[in-house]
Image 1: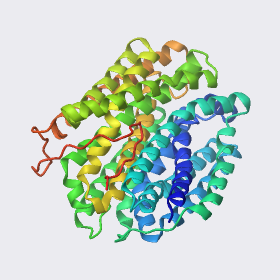
Image 2 (image 1 turned 120 degrees about the horizontal axis):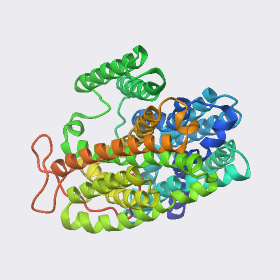
Image 3 (image 1 turned 90 degrees about the vertical axis):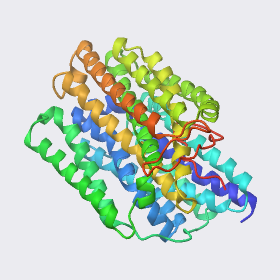
Image 4 (image 1 turned 30 degrees about the vertical axis):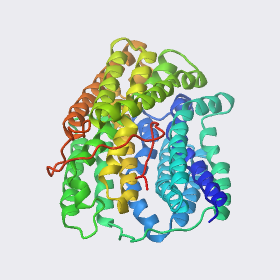
Amino acid sequence: MTRRGAWAATAVVCSALFLIGLDFTVLNVAIPGLRQDLGPSMAETQWIVDGYALTLGACVLAAGTLSDSYGRRRAFLAGLAVCALASLGGALADSPAQVVAARCGMGLGAALFMPATLATIAHVFREAAADRRRAMSLWAAVAGIGTLTGPVAGGWLVEHSSWRAAFWLNVPVALAVFAVAVVFVPESTGPRPRPLDRAGALLSSGGLLALVWGIIEAPGRGWLSGPVLAAFLVAAVLMAVFAWWQRRCPAPMLPPAVARDGGVGAASVALALMSFAVFGAMFIVTLYLQQVRGMSPLEAGLRITPLSVGLAVGAGAAAVVSKRYGARASVTAGLVLIAAGCAVLAGDTHVLAFEGLAGFGAGLVAPVATETLMAAVPEESSGLGSALNDASRQVGSTLGVAVLGSVLATVSTGDSAPVAAGGDAFVRGMAAAAWTAAALTLAGAALAWFRLPGPEGTPGRSSAGETASVPEPLPVQGLTPEAVRRP
């Protein structure tokens, strides 16, 4: 393939990648309008937001294996088609259940084509190291821009049309990218395709689904009700069986060397908790700005944009901090700052201070934790590392919305209270949710301090007692930089 053709393919897959970040956040500011139109409960609202990330996070590892085995272009096109059809269903939905189903379908489509985007870039630039690094940087930047564009785009669409426009937007864009991809995206497969661990995929997806269902339904049904306790029990059993199966499966979703590496575990937890706190709090803050402060959807979307400024500054600082003090210092400091931002939000609902602290902290965490994870994964398994990175963030985001939304609903006294009750009830619930996020993020900071590598000469230790290497910072940082190992 020519250099021009390689860059054309990169532009196409990055256009599709932009949709993933956009779809994750575009509906946040449209939720109040959707609630007025379809009348979903608070639990149904959480499912509408969470269905996308839950399906994406649960399916992305299996989808990465499928794309390596059966063709990345084929998976890319199939994912776009599924995304377009699901978006059409969401635009035409007339019940909360239909919207949830549409969001889950969109997440499935995104899971199919997301691993193929990064793998395609690696394939077309396999003999051009410099261009490959630049393409990876572009990929990371587009992923972050899509996520941060969502609230503003959603606010504008809602003000000029309705919440359905957030779904209609995807249909022509996905079809246009599909048509261009047929011409410009080449087919490729992995050098040694691995068989799909179907049992592992079903066990992990089922366990995550049961856990999220229990958390979301608990405020309405009761935390000690039979269905909720049964859901938590099912989740625990399925996850335990999944761990047992991964040790005995001939081709597990997580190879033993990766699963045992303490650096991989700490980096994955850091990414998950970063997403848990930032995106879970963004969900609540968006409701607060519109339901309590009375802002329009567009005003609420613009009000969230300072988060991106803090993120950009933090990402720039991460390169300096990680190079001088190691991944341990950068990730730990970032998680502490996110916790501080959540504490400020809990104390006096100071949204701007939260955005600055949490954004800067996320900028310190995301690129360094991602590169640490990728450095610990063998080069031939870089696709797996990228998918693990994606899954960590999506699962964290899913649990963030589920857990913090449920804390908000529980403390606000009842399923309808966060929206129907007065501002004081909502603020109490938001404070409890913010303190929850702060506590969990601080726990993640402690884990990062003890498990991630420090500066040169004081490396961290893996779970097997091996020395962990200190990664070089990413050339371009952002909230969602799914980096791959440099050639």
